[in-house]
Amino acid sequence: MTSSPLLQMRGLRIEAGNAPGGPPIVHGLDLQLAPGEVLGLIGESGAGKSTVGLAAMGYSRDGCRFAGGTVIFDGQELTGAAAKVRQALRSSRIAYVAQSAAAAFNPAWRIIDQHCEFPVLRGRMTRSQAEADAVDLYRRMRLPNPGEIGFRYPHQVSGGQLQRAMTAMAMACRPDLIIFDEPTTALDVTTQIEVLHAIRDAVDRFGTAAIYITHDLAVVAQMADRIMVLRNGELVEEAATQTMLAAPRESYTRSLWAVRKLRPDPRPAHAEGVTPLVSVTNLSAAYHDTKVLEDINLDFHRGRIVAVVGESGSGKSTLARTISGLMPPIAGGVSFDGEPLPPDCRRRSREQLRQTQIIFQTADTALNPRHTVREIIGRPLTFYLGLRGSAREQRIRQILSDIELDPDEFLTRLPGELSGGQKQRIGIARALAADPRFIICDEVTSALDQIVAEGILRLLLRLQRDKGLTLMFITHDISTVRAIADIVVVMQNGRVVEHGSRDEVLDAPRMDYTRRLLASVPEMDPDWLDRVLAARETVGIARPATASIHILDTASATKNRS
Image 1 (cartoon, helix red, strand yellow):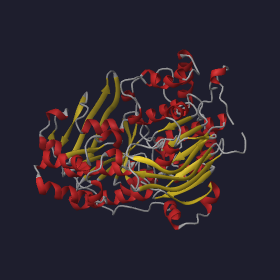
Image 2 (spheres, one colour):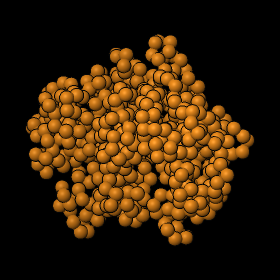
Image 3 (cartoon, helix red, strand yellow):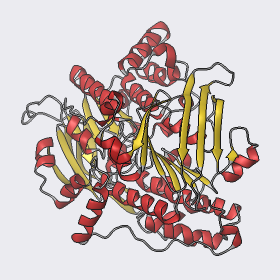
Image 4 (cartoon, helix red, strand yellow):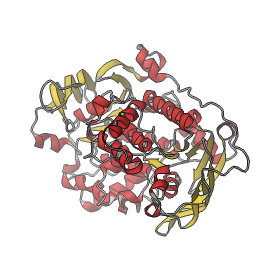
């Protein structure tokens, strides 16, 4: 390494629109990154974090334009460079790990085919070498069956597993710079520990520089040497991680540090003998010959919020899909208000469909990219409630106001013109438009910063109270469970292993598995990850595998590093 920076941004300005004078997204930002350094970018949704990360590759998303300033990577100016120059750097010397793995992978290609594409295309490895290297990286990412999982299609693995596979794919060409855009958003807390360690180990091993974008302050504390806080496309403050955590200067930064103290009002226990709104009885489900749910029995009582937690692949989202009729079970069934529901949603009546709505984990793939916000929210209003014309328009505006988005600003936008948090709020609005009684929330705050997430949780609590809604809330965020849940259900390997009130499960867990989940929640301490890994070694839980990653001794595989 040399003292010269690997990446420099000077006076960077990015505007919305294809013509000069559009709304500014990034305002004259200066950024510098040394070889091997990890920079954390934090801020609330819409702060410009992902836009800055993409700009590091000389890229601006559709509907945005570079309006001023420079981006210099290893001496090469990128914003004015020819397309072939920028394309040659991407995936070879600069890699990107997207927030939504499900949207980043081609659903028609096997995972390993997508992993091997660029190492082979860039002449760094043969196909057989790339496959062997992929398996080694999958092992480092703690993916199950590393020799086999790459030969599956993206839809055949869990969201957390797919996110780890994408991180491995970004490392395939041993880049000089990796932009991590919320790489652990989709991961449960125990898996997150393994992935954070694997990322940090790979960055240290190869001297790779990284920009780590996140809204999770405890996570960035484990990863970054230095932190920059952004708000509305401007730098709020910047400091070394230890300094930032110990003494943030700005009040906005201190507001990001605040621990969420939201707690639901205590509710009396449901009366004995009252029919639950939703009952799951002896439910089992399978993908082909692999059983993923085993004899699930759960009741969802009116006006209650039931949080379902567990590691990636534990069956949380599969349970949601089975209840909603998207995946018929192989045994057992679901009843609504005492009446059995057809197992396949295509056989349910329109009224049965209206009563149960699901908000999916990944807004990127759940929203039609060609539909405006008006169309996305308006379709269920017409389909379920028959609203048209001015009545429909008025209701759309009211729903947008309820989720704290300005109707005049957002009605005509497409999903591609929204931030990750804004897209998730539109997904929530679409579910609310059907006026349901039961809503399944599948990781609805996982993509949101603390400030926005708290607003969404307060909104859901208010709607639940005012409308008497019953919520199934799937999450891996224990602070969210404490903030919203009445009942907590813990799942492991397709089974319910613990079930009780929020205080019973979180304050006095009976099962070792539950205690391990709770011990894996990140803390605002840069040394927390090392302490957890050391504790695991003490009790015999191995760290992530550290089998050597092949660095091929060929001229084509040797990078000209600074």
